[in-house]
Structure formats: C-alpha cells, structure tokens
Length: 152
Image 1 (tube, rainbow, N blue to C red):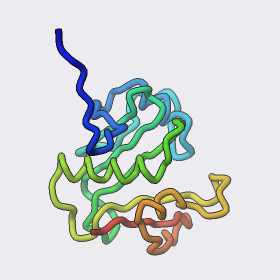
Image 2: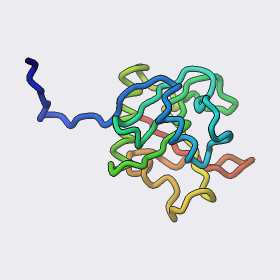
Image 3: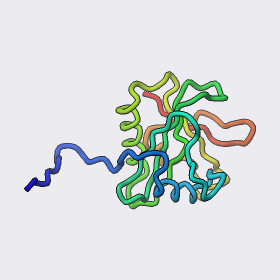
Image 4: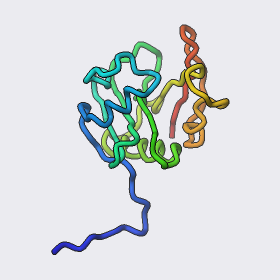
C-alpha cells in the first residue's frame, strides 16, 4: 500500500498540464468573452501552446508562443478563465511559474495579455493580473484592448 504524501513546506499548485484538446478547457473557453466560435474543438491558436487547468476543470490558462504581428518579443496568455473559488492572482502567478518551468527563460518582453474593458464588469480591468505583478503598458489602437505585461 502506498502512503499519500503531502508537501507542507510549499503550497501545492492548482494547475495540471493538459493537451489542447481538453474538453473541460474547451467548455471554459466557450464561456470566455474572447471565444470566436463557441463549440469549436479548437480553442488554442496554431503554434506552441501550454494548456493548464485545475483538477476540477473550473479554471483554464493558455500560454502561446508563435509568430506575432506586433512588436513584442513575448509569449502571450491567450486565455485565462477562473470559475473556481481560488484567487485569480494566485492562479496567474502559478501559471507563469509553470510556463517558465516548461519553456525556460522568458523572452525579452516577458508574457503579455490583452483585456477588453468593455466586455467585463470590473471597474479595474485586468485587476487580477495587476495583483499578480503584471503592468498596464498601453492599448491596442485598432480595438482598444488593454495590454498587460509580466516581466521579471
């Protein structure tokens, strides 16, 4: 019989790594404002993706690395949705740490994400990212999305 062991010196990660066809992640993506085609089996961009979800399937994170159309040398958080009871900023910090564990050192511009302030209810769009150490660095001129960046 194996004994169940707990690491009491470090907090456990909420995240598990899954493939980009994970149904729980797809269902969460369907409820995210950025989703273009609800029900589509693909919820990740083409290219290199790191997909994380909570064991209960109530939060999803996707980091993407690919050919960018903007000036950034960065990876991008293309999807974050938290329907769990866990603090979003804590999930974000853990997701960044896991991304670095799998992919290594951050690119020169770190990790970026965008937030559509007109699609969310918050009076402080991107607040959970800001609480996780991300900085507001501007807006996209074409659609007004807020750009947030994590750099070490």
